[in-house]
Amino acid sequence: MQTNHLAQKATLVRAWSLKSTTAAGSGHPTTCMSAADLATVLFDKYFRYDLKNPLFPGNDRFILSKGHAAPLLYTLFALSGAFPVEDLLTLRQFNSPLEGHPTPNFAYSDAATGSLGQGVSIGAGLAYVAKNEKLPYKTYVLTGDGELAEGQVWEALNFASYYKLDNLIILSDINRLGQSQPTMFEHHIDEYVGRFRAFGAEVIAIDGHDVVQIDKALLDATQNTTGKPYVVVAKTLKGKGVSFLEDTNGWHGKPLKKDDLEKALKELGEVDESLRFQLKEPQSVVIPNLIRDPKKMLKPSRFAFGEQVQNDSSYAIGDEVATREVYGKILADIAKEDSRIYALDAEVKNSTYSLDFMKAIPDRFVECFIAEQNMVGVAVGMSRIGKKPFVSTFAAFLTRAFDQIRMGAIGHANITFVGSHSGVSIGEDGSSQMGLEDIAMFGTIPEAVVLHPSDAVSTAKLLPLLAVHKGISYLRTLRPKTPVLYKNDATFTIGGSKILRFAQDDILTIVAAGITVHEALKAYEELKKKRIHVRIVDCYSIKPIDKPTLLSCLDETKQKIIVTVEDHYEHGGLGDFVLSAVSQSDARVEKLAVKKFSRSGKPELLLKDAGIDAENIVKTVEKLLA
Image (tube, rainbow, N blue to C red):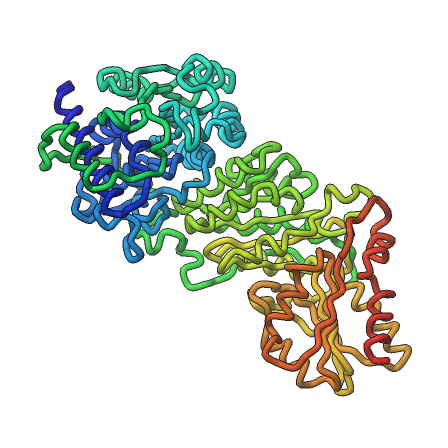
């Protein structure tokens, strides 16, 4: 091995990390410098990648978990020939793909990172698919030491060791310094080694600036067959190579001014600017359901033109079926026709009914146990290489993983989330189990879809639409059984709704979703007895919402009033989406929603206590008309 040759390339990586951040006037050069030797040996000797096909399933994957070291990522690919090296000087400019933290706007970034602690989970998702589908690629994750204080890292290691992901290689850059002070264990390397081993990893500790030690560690890692993820704990120095930066606190996130840059480059010494990495060719693989063209990556041929999978499930009107019961069975029917689909659950599969998927297609069911943040990260990794994960748990527990969901959306992830046990209607389990923030949470994500079906048929018909939807989507399901409202040949669309009751002399419109559709129908019958005719709309698509139907209802009713009823907190839910849709009209929107913390009790009592049952709907309508 030509150690001097590798050292020269590492110096070039450091130099461009400095130059690009100075040109940008912002960024994190010193954290790039500490990891430069690790990354240089990886890209020079071990990384297999086809630059022409970033999503080719034979490519090794590289997750920069410490996303603030983005200039390092960009420099590695520039020096590999992905784009002109001079383009590094466009770092952080508005029209440049070289953003301050990586996103897939940079074609060679496997994830959006920068919210620390998520990279190992994403890597575990990539490694899981490779292991499960016998793909030859390795997944490398570069972490910093500061982010090792995040619990998600250890959730991910738990997952990786449990599933024997020995194709997952974690390079941990222990450079001692965080943003404002030294990290938790500084350079006490044994502390890190002990923790990684305790979570089931194969671990080696090295000098992260000794290219010989790095080379040996990576060789061992790539040949690892122990059934354990491999962790390289590398002791490094932040700002390595420049004396006034090296191991010095206070330089985090600070680029050098031009005068200091000249001093730093002089100290790094002359380096051959023509040096480049020659990435190794990936092993050839042929996967029928993964397409080499990235633009077609998420389009299996079965659905290339939006064709829906038909299922043989049928329900009789009036049958009592919980929408959550439909989920696993129908998803399994769809997945038999679509090999991209994986189902992930957080150890509540007998409540979410993803258990039915597990029974039907066990090799594509992933038990993630009670670690929701890691579960979302795993799904993000799977999505990157063309899989379509469906992630299920109680709606309330998805809230603890919102940052991971948010980052997945930034990273163009293609995931459907399914939240069961939504609203006060779950009953006796009490307020800690009630998902009452979930619509607001998913509704904030640009371009996300939020669906809330009220019966078995609508659930069964909406699931295939989510299978072909690209991006983040959310399906809200119910714990209690509800009567089937629709015939089996009914059609549903993302962005649609159903008018369930109407007449020419309707006075106003009641808009509901999920459990409150049934309460609205009960209220309709009571109001009808009093000769008060109202229109009932099942607004099963909350985002996008059916604006034309809402406006049409306003035009066709005697009064321009809409009453929204939802088993969700008052702000950010169905009522607010309706308000936004009709905001340009002179309509009045009266929101009935959950306005306080609930408690244990029978579902019907809790709906009444929250003010969203049929009795309260009737009272509200009468008050409005008075």
